[in-house]
Length: 220
Image: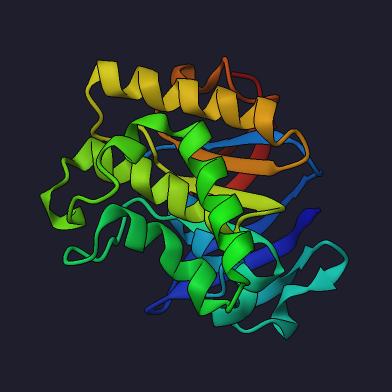
């Protein structure tokens, strides 16, 4: 499904990723754990085409991602929930959810089907679907960001630090949503980055540790 082979990334002359290699199969739930600044977000941004590679290659579903522009990667089934959420504050929650699918010009019936799926996995966001996103709490925004990623992430979803800053009760609900996602979409691959690996034990199959831009398998 997703394969990184010897990926190098440099930002402003500093080497951030150093020969990163990892593979994630269809339906796998995988954690990428490491301290802040270790390279987790840069790894995700490399997959999404938001930073250029200085070495190595990234493949997805048999395709070289170098051949897919960043703005088209959602069209091949990759959803991304960045750490900072990046919701449109003047749009309603439902408008934020629908937007990426509308940008892809999906049929209305398909958008409605995906929206209902997101609400099944994240029932609490349906309760404030008509609320402006700018009025959400940080935790609510994380939930909406997950729902938005699911609207286009039919094969792979990248969740960057989804538990960061969440109160314990909301972190529990977010974890429950990820477990519902597994039941509802068993073939969907999910890569989750996190600084505190204990949070991910109930919801992932395997893990990689990233330190100073280098990755190796690890146990949770």
